[in-house]
Image 1 (tube, rainbow, N blue to C red):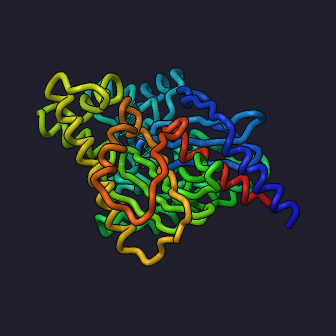
Image 2: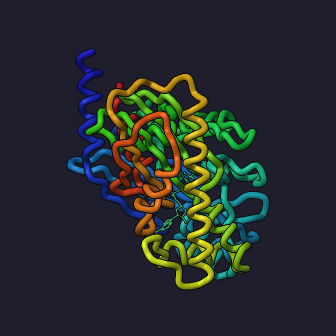
Length: 361
Ligand SMILES: Nc1ncnc2c1ncn2[C@@H]1O[C@H](COP(=O)(O)OP(=O)(O)OP(=O)(O)O)[C@@H](O)[C@H]1O
Ligand SMILES: [Mg+2]
């Protein structure tokens, strides 16, 4: 029991550390972690987190691939250029950031292993590729049986998709590498990473590429969790369709220069505003509906914070936009404030790692 409490203290301390993040370099070897690991398996990125000294360190890989036909010659060139790939069925599967370079050269899109937060059913090799991409970040742990905590979406309320299959596939793979795998809901991971000072009580929302994940937690216990299948990818697609441009071009504009704090200057920006609005309203509508129809709402004496994370919250002015929209909804719990996470692209991995630390044996 004493040890267990020690672990929890270590985990709480870790949740207050700063994240030092970087991208996986092309050609760089995967790590053999020592100590518990947090893993965010997201539609756009996979992020691995470890607790090292004064900081949390995260490494990010693109969750994407690109296939090219097999040839001996190409293989030699790929190897010489340290491109990450594997061979199957007379094809090379180029993985992660390497795939992005290829797709740009061919002026097309990378393929994805996941869609809307879950394994993509349209890709035959999706599972193998996802495993290979995870393997570019982590190899076997130094100590067998190391705890690894990976993020899982909540069940989507707007479709019949279930998370059971996805979760089992990932668990089996991580166990086969020698880890002791456990999962954490992505919304709860947001709470674990950001709400230590609020006794892990509040609403964590992770707005990613494929979906938005929501968790209302009371003293670190997930009371309500769910997801909606709309996120950054939805914005890119819908804006693209509206203005007649490819979604990838919209994504680049959105990530590089778009601000919600400024009035739109052109058609793309106008459409981005419209679909950001649409996403935030869908999310808040779902939150209002889910909370009102639940009989599990705790009677919390104090108002609770909402904390927002995930790449979709990054444009400047997002918080104010969200706060304004929130005024039009009526939630059965009082909200003290809206906060944006410290480092929205690394919040889930950090929260998963905090959970892994607390479960260490
Ligand atoms: N600077 C930015 N401004 C706006 N959007 C951004 C920015 N950077 C990334 N994004 C968007 O954030 C999304 C990716 O976020 P994130 O990495 O949190 O998702 P994920 O965890 O991979 O996906 P999910 O949780 O939905 O499975 C993409 O839609 C991307 O376009
Ligand atoms: Mg995510």
